[in-house]
Amino acid sequence: MIKDIQEKIIKLKKEKNICILAHCYQTHDILEVADFTGDSFGLAQKAAAADCDGVIMCGVRFMAETCKILSPEKRVYLPRSEAGCPMAEQLDVDMLRQLQEMYKGYKTVAYINTTAELKTLCDVCVTSSSAVDIIRKMDADKILFIPDCNLGDYVAKQIPEKQFKFVSGGCPTHARITVKEVQKAKEAHPNALVLLHPECQPAVTAMADYAGSTTGIMDFAKKSSAKEFIIGTENSIVQHLSIDCPDKMFYALSKDCFCHNMKITSITDVLHCLEGTDGEEIILPEETRIKAKVCIDEMLRLGQA
Image (cartoon, rainbow, N blue to C red):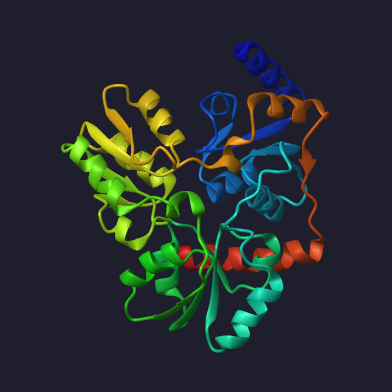
């Protein structure tokens, strides 16, 4: 059945010239039909460069919005409109304006996991893999970092010469991982390296052998000579790495590291989106899209500096 659905998807996406993007946290059957897999911003860039008429983002809403920001000429779809991101939705425009009023003189840095509306008020956008480099290069000593205080703390510790302000926001999936769980996992697998996402709490991230983005974690595990790894990010990565590296052992740090929003999209949702019977087309007002793109362009400029 799954193979039959996948074959229909592959046929339809070719007929309709649709590019399918799949974030790493999607299930493996979706990754198998995707044109590109990876982290959110990298996927948006690949979609922008692709010769296609439409894009289906198998992920969450802010990721589809980023695709639309970079590819205004293409039709962008989210297979399930309910697929949101609690982190991206923790702040709204009014709240951010109040914060900026409180911290005058601070440049606002938006983690990519923010809505398009929030990005319109920000100076620079960053990803988890580029944040340290981009913020270090900014012509500013005072940084208001939104919305993830855990990632913000991770960045700030590496740039002690700058002053940071954070909000009490973050990823509930990563934030629920505890120090006790890391200790328990290390006791169970003493030879395993601990690979964590910096969206985890600071005390947890401090216990990592490697901390980085989702694709960073996957690349590290694939290239490492080690044979055992404890994975401290969304548990789908354990499955993907186990398939990609069957000669290595991967263990979930926490059975509760499960993102319900990422998992709401199924392979049949992708099919229905292609058939035009379900899914939501992402529409952004042009003024919003242009303003949101400013902080993304600044990230790209600084990244090349």
